Image (cartoon, rainbow, N blue to C red; front, side, top):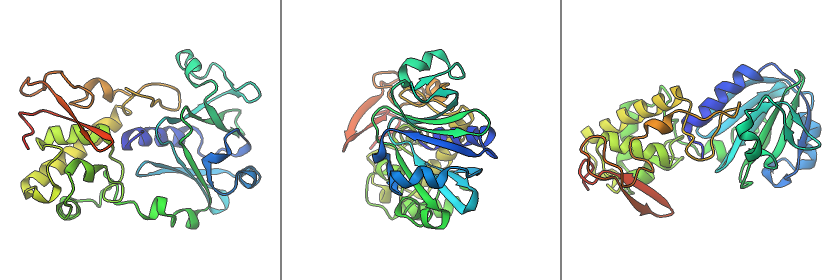
Length: 290
């Protein structure tokens, strides 16, 4: 699932490429992606609206439109947004998208917005888990998808003191807490592993057992890792691609995520992987002692 750096990469691209453009038409073939409103009303309402700004809240992409409407897209596991020229009838991608991506996304595009500059914004989603919400901004912003989110991981107002207050009261394992979007928004499996490795904290440590110094280390590691990943335009070891179909660069410098059996970058002990509920945690058994 795209995490904060991947979503921020998409948002930055969209702001550069589609802000100020009008939506002149909509095509889709998977009505179940529309959680609000009913799909039959969606195209009629959104057609003709100008895109005013694109923002991010946690892992949500927020497209603010004219007349105070808001389009929320959550890419979920395999969704990604692409900008290019599509043939709607045949669902084929034209040359704006790299040839290497054509075979992968053809047939997986389930939502297309036609724009007045000749381009189109398409949502490709292999597993059909992506979610779309649309309506008046004040209504969408108060839905649980937004209202229940914790502070954003890179929000300037989330200082060390606030971070310690959020984490220290949790009895769950620290990796679980970092990935809980209602505690802190934006972190998932990839970056929680790398953050904890950098901070030298075992992913199974109960959050409430962490010292003030350990919490500060996690906070600093969180900021450093996420900012670096944003700069490198995300991680593409799985499905993520930017709006041009290009891979992100953070995957080549990962610290521990999916590096089971590889030597630790600090001590050379082999990285381990353990199950944590339905997820995996990667860590160094020497540097991150329980």
